[in-house]
Image (cartoon, rainbow, N blue to C red; front, side):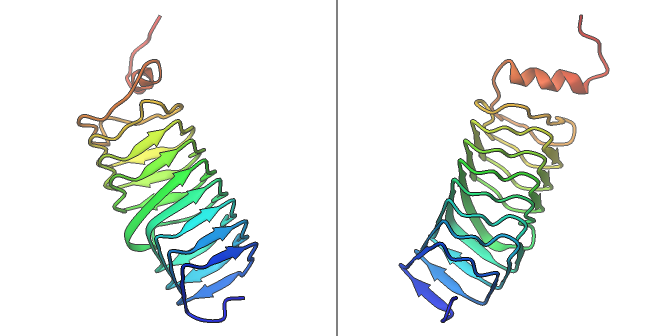
Length: 188
């Protein structure tokens, strides 16, 4: 469907291309596009917005996502780890279940009103990352920098403070009581 390798300020509506290679998108908007099970290689997305799109089970190889917004999107089963830097993404009202973020720079990222279920964050720099009103059920945090990260309005997180740097991270009650479940204690 994509006829050239360079797009600027264009809007794509209900596209369903499954193979994108070496395409540069700058300030583009994708609406109701179905990129599920697609292969994206060496693509660059800069200042783009995805609205009501499905990228589930997509394979992202050496792609760049710089200043990107995903809004009301389905992004299930994606490994973002092979993405190139900079990686600046905002997820708003998305389903990003079963995603993998491994050894990534996720500083100041925003996860808003999203289902972040069964995801893996391993060895990431997540300083000042915001999880605003997110459900983090079964999500794993291992060896991350979570300094000043904000979890105050999110729920169902289970973060081991022995495995993550939580210096000045923000939490609220009663969800913060989840830390007690990691201790060898009994509460009666």
